[in-house]
Image 1 (spheres, one colour):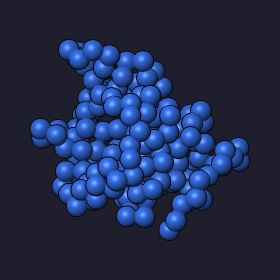
Image 2 (cartoon, rainbow, N blue to C red):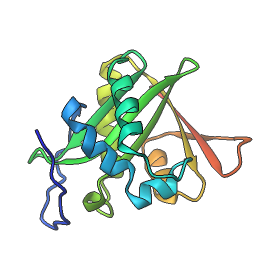
Image 3 (cartoon, helix red, strand yellow):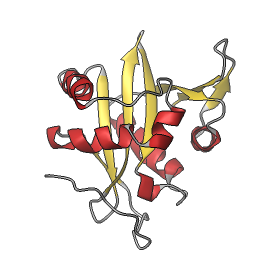
Length: 166
């Protein structure tokens, strides 16, 4: 499937969000989302990502499903509205997410994350960690709404969150 850039549309429905594992043909879509100005502003590394760098990164993640899982979240019309990725670092699963530009401001970030967490739990993953820039209020709210607990951090400008399946 080839993705074209999706323009802003007001009539999308977000009542049902469905997760699916990322596919090789999602590479360009993820690169476009990663290089969105708001995503770069909230990233730890603010530089745009080259297609070559992203290609290497993306393929390495696809080849290691035991340490990285990426979900594309679609609405009921199978239009991708965001992504949620978990990566294992030091035996901990770190989670992050992003929304497509056209899906922002629709109050679906919490729902997107909840759908992904449910899917990851079915894979046997029960504890998630997140690091969010302290000025990224929207992402902080999404994690808090999904019952992530704030943890103290010694890193400047970062808030740590942890989610434990209860």
